[in-house]
Image 1 (cartoon, helix red, strand yellow):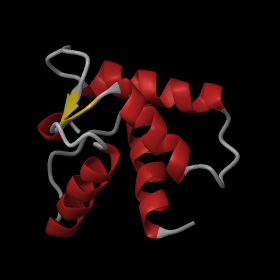
Image 2: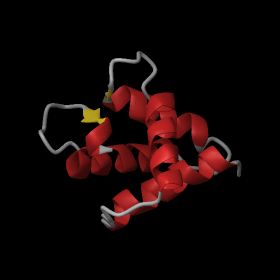
Image 3: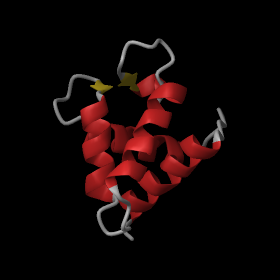
Length: 94
C-alpha cells in the first residue's frame, strides 16, 4: 500500500472510530492538505460526496473495499466532518 493509500485508510479509520485530535505535526498537516487537494478534483476548495467517494475508490482499489463499505465511510465522514452542514467538506473541516 503506497503512502497516499495509507493516509486515506488511516483517515477512514479515524472517521469511523471517531478519533479527533486537534494536535498534529507539520508533516501530518501537509499530508492532510495534499490529500484534500488530490480529492478536490474540480479545485473549488471543498469536497463533494462524489469527490470523496471517488477519492476513496481510487486509493482503496487494492484493499478489496466494496462500494457499500466506501459509501459507509463517506456517509460517516460527512456526518462527522461537515460541521456547517452545507453538504461539502472544506479543508478546515477535513
